[in-house]
Image (tube, rainbow, N blue to C red; front, side):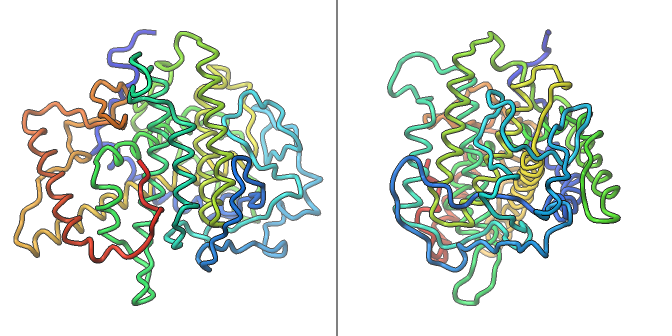
Length: 442
């Protein structure tokens, strides 16, 4: 297959992705509030396989509110699970609980078994992802383990050999997850003086905006998820979304809307440019590392942080499974309800992150105006001449993705934006509050 552009470089600019996200977010918000997508079964008590921590977050914001059976949709109640068809395939798809993993070699993460007794149902709407106060060595240790032990040495510090695109993309997907989680914390911050929740601009400046590459990695994950959902659209058209009375048709319509709008820019990501040489050892190595990261989420001491970390790792793992485990054989698709719920909720998390980025940029401009300063007309992630690139040709020393621009003024714009970021970070540092090791670990 011939490509007119670099197969690892999406064609959409940031502004195009912003516009597409504005269209998809309302339907996506309604979708994740439906009964089918808001209840998620998760095992929060699986032992950490990597170290003995023994530390627990005692802040009440860390706690997860379990959904009692009486509040569950009828299809999810224990007495009804026996009637659910477990032999889901692309020809006969439905709620699809599996007692065992039928195709483990295709899975990119460790799944919680929804039909087992190990776990609880959680109403995601009642347990929002936000600032919990989780910090300290326990939190820092998790991200150190992810980056130092399970990400590739893409900076070349241990080897002079060039790093392949697949390893760089893997690193950036993990970096994008980290950045998006940090962004949700900053956007839903608890002001301990007033007891009110809201966006914390200083948090955004210190953890995210200080390096625009972090923002680009969020966009990268967004297009990977959108591409995956677009790819399984025929499968989703046949999927029986077991929901409460009167909700089935509405859920199906919302899924169709989200799939259509997620596919608005069909060339955002071309997975055929990765693993093109059929290197089975490489794909096995990357898959094993991704599975390890999903296991590390069981080492997070904050219950709510662990739940959202596990869900989003499952969502990203499902996207990679769609893109790289089936080739062009959609008749082989097999997914659990856990994977479908995680996939769409993870897209919603990234969609919300992109909207939050825009909100924080507006807040920056307002603060600069108060100081009598002017902000750049266009920021790196908003530049019509910029695209989310995966080819690594402009890779920085920390291996994150850089902005690739096509206008002569872009370099000055980037420098101006970075200067604005550091100025604002300094101005608002005193208002940052606490949060410790929830900070970026890169």
